[in-house]
Image (tube, rainbow, N blue to C red; front, side):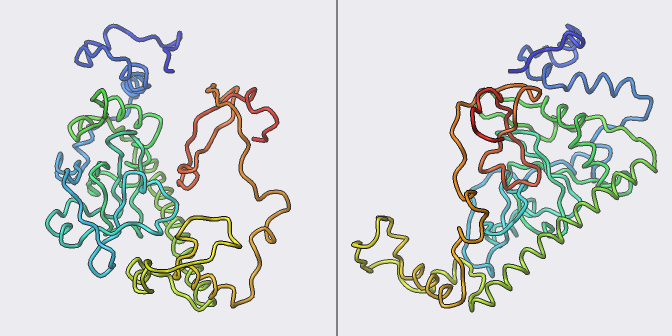
Amino acid sequence: MKITKLDFPVMSSWMENNGRRLDCNPYLSGAFEAKVILEKLSAKKQPLHEVTKGGMKGIFHAGRESRQYVNDPDYGIPFLGSTDILAADFYGLPLLSKKQVKSNPNYTIQEGWTLITRSGTIGRMAYVRSEMDGMVCSEHAMRVVPDSKKILPGYLYAYLSSSFGVPIVISGTYGSIIQSIEPQHIADLPVPRLGKDIEETAHKNIEEAAKLRSEYQAQVKAATNRLFSVLGLKNMTTVDWHKMGSVLGFSHNLDSHVSLRAANFNPRFKKLCETIKFNKYKELYEICVPGTLQRGGRYKRIDADSEFGCQLIGQRQLFWLRPEGRWVAKSALGNVQP
């Protein structure tokens, strides 16, 4: 629950400056607090649309339309959903039809852009790295295209994803059921200009981080391909998988098995298992620290402030670049180790 701070109360004048909105989100999200601090800052501030390429044309999304997915990489381009932009590994992305992308170029993203989730959970951001260049992205992610002649891409991302940028982005949220934001809601977001040295330092740090992440992605892919090569396999696409044979019309004796899941007896699956077991191998539990191959403990989840809690990371967030989680009370964990 969001509450106001006694040392920074909500002022009635804020309502006048915010279109007389009476919902609490704009006032308790930290946006006005950030704006007040920015106003006191002596540095020059520019509206976001003044530092984007083509002004308002540099803040956009792909627009809503039905998607045409394909299985063959020859006819598709890796597609990033609004959650996928946060992922640490882009393996297994769906493919959007090249024909559809050609008819709507706004799907394509380029290196150096900032992506902002704009519906559902709003304000999560990602910096487009080299391996993301040329991929396509959901309309649920806003594109912010910096004008490199006016501002450095890394600095703009660093600011937008900061404790000043995020609250102001979120404050533009509208809608009671499915919340969202549009380009015009962040067009006037104030961007402080802190001088060449500071902005270049921030840009270089973001670029270096992006480069290291891209190298990680390349090395993970190389390691996976090498592993498959040793096993006599290859990193199969969906098309390759379907070429291995039919998934219908097979039978299996269940006398020695407890599973009733048909996929466990699929001839394709069994063939892969046999190929792997043909080589020297160990079972998973043999290479794990004894006693660690287990599920997490169960306990009542009571929300708490970070001072009195532990951060709980969910299954989805576990694979994000920067995992986010809710804070749950330590007192409710019992014997569960955080």
